[in-house]
Length: 252
Ligand SMILES: Nc1nc2c(ncn2[C@@H]2O[C@H](COP(=O)(O)OP(=O)(O)O)[C@@H](O)[C@H]2O)c(=O)[nH]1
Ligand SMILES: [Mg+2]
Image (cartoon, rainbow, N blue to C red; front, side):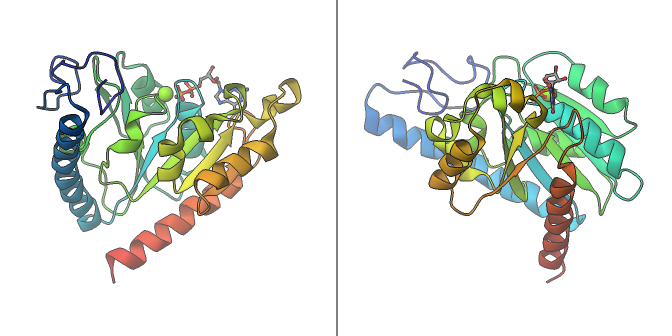
């Protein structure tokens, strides 16, 4: 079993697998864990450099993580349109294939770059390092990183972001924080999306919030609908607070 992505081939090389990580899996559990640490340690070093690069330009970076289709791009489109008068936002989007999300984001008028990961199932710090220089986000702006749709691997890879946002839509089932605890434990903010659909679903919001808090007692949990705009203001409040906190830290 691959220690990074959980796929079943115990001997594959992650370069072939599309992750771009120079490590090979061993059969023994102990060895596999050692190699995973090595890969993540290398990633963390690059992530720290990204963090410094972003802090030096006073850029707040958020890493959006969820399963495919839970509404990341839709929420970004709405956020950019509603906040662009007072806030410069740029977007790095990760998907295995297609420029579709970048085209949607570009239609809002904001700077964006698509990272296609091929067979890769997450973004890593090295991909962000290259993309940052190409995207060249404005100083004193907000950078949204839309990770590859996946509730598992993105949680393991620090990108150099200031905060991680975990998203879950009502159609996915309220037990996902328990089934995918790494994602929800890593999240600074959890967004329950597509709340306009709740009347048509048997999704128990309170139970989902309780599960998320069981995994991560510190996480703030907000419910919203990017379709109707319901409760998105609370999320904008969180974004402004995160921006203020990041500025205080950057100038401390
Ligand atoms: N009803 C409803 N549908 C939504 C909402 N947000 C996104 N969607 C739909 O969900 C689908 C996937 O959205 P998308 O933003 O592409 O998800 P992503 O893969 O996480 O980026 C699209 O058909 C969207 O129109 C929402 O708040 N309410
Ligand atoms: Mg998307």
